[in-house]
Length: 343
Image (cartoon, rainbow, N blue to C red; front, side):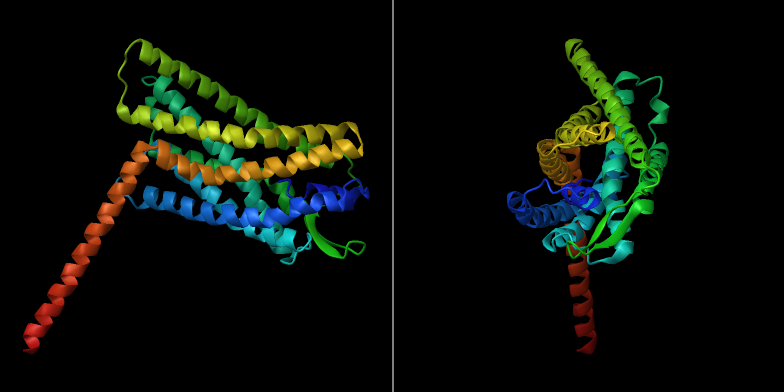
């Protein structure tokens, strides 16, 4: 992610473009914002996972994908507090090399896995509405679970540069131990190579698939409405929720990926200039936190838009309430029997 883009560029290329007074306001509110979305994100995503995992009915294919998306969001939320502490310390990383790699791994995994879980969600809705008869047999929970496992593995594969090149290094001139990506200087184009790979597989490919599926889904819904075709209510409800989640993801994440791509291209062609660097750094910071907010927004959409999710949540609460009442009555009955025996 771009949490310390400005810091990394300053310490690695020795430039002093950024005015510390101008950036002080930005760094001062970041820990507060991170703390706010972390609390909301953990509570909301844990709630989503509880509803999906503990409900007596098995999850549908779409719910399997959405529950894994909630798990990826929860991983991000658990990693962000470490970065809040890092920013509060003036980017002096206090947690050591192991957590430097692990925390950044968790943040990256969220970015990569989230977008591919949405690819699976979009493809599932596409098959459900456009190719219902021909490929319906592929929409089975066991295939959905296998797809999620492959996504987690692919996300980990994309994080290899993070695991290899994340370092904690002391910079005496700043008196900090910074956690940053330290590519070897003797391979000048290695960073550009990895950046290009990540842009292709974490942005261009998945966004293209999501866009194609979304357009086809909307066309299918319009066609059904024109023909007055009455599809299953469950499919319609699931599709509405999926479209809302896809739209929220595009709004929150596309600006970040676009700016990251532009930043990579600027560095690749060797364009320099304080004004350009400041603009990219500010955009990186703002759009990174917009992307993080998506992990809080998804559970809210499940409740507002997802009628099936609300139904499951209410059924789960009723199920727990019945168990609580039954346990209470059983305890009272046992206590009453014990008293009668003693008398």
